[in-house]
Length: 200
Figure 1: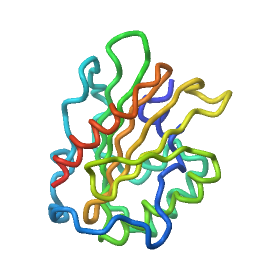
Figure 2: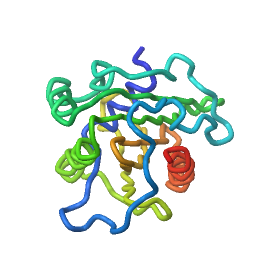
Figure 3: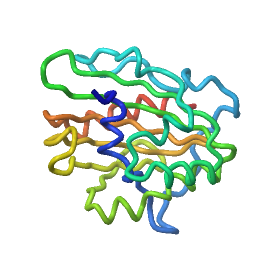
Figure 4: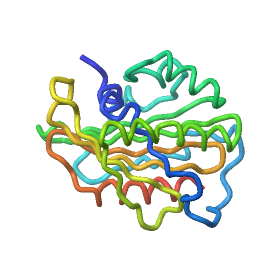
């Protein structure tokens, strides 16, 4: 069986969204912790009620693991390498009932601020081509939300995920919640607010 995080990535792969040039929000978020900061400390460790941690999906992420689930792993590897991928950390939770819903959070660190921004921007075309719906994320500077449903016939069929992405300094953050029983967008926003607070 595919790991839960990989299954979530298979649904979310390629949907890292962006905004057209010149349309990004103005202003500057709070300064980001310096390179080399313990990435685990930058991700919240308590999800919404009703979810339990998946221990073997709470770990550091290598470049090899970061490209798992991508439609084209070699293209994903080339993109991350070009942007200066350094390291990542992920946490995954599953619902404590039979619904099969998942919360997935990660932080990817790049060699510099521009690499993190470039990786965020890289998915704009994919998000538009596959028809993923974007939504606003109030209260989080520069954050973008995406709603993505699994394609028919794929693992996680009938699942819908709400994902929120933002960049802080040299790091790209993502939090996603979804599954067969579609949680609300507000659930994703609440988690993203928690993530933004730990990212500083």
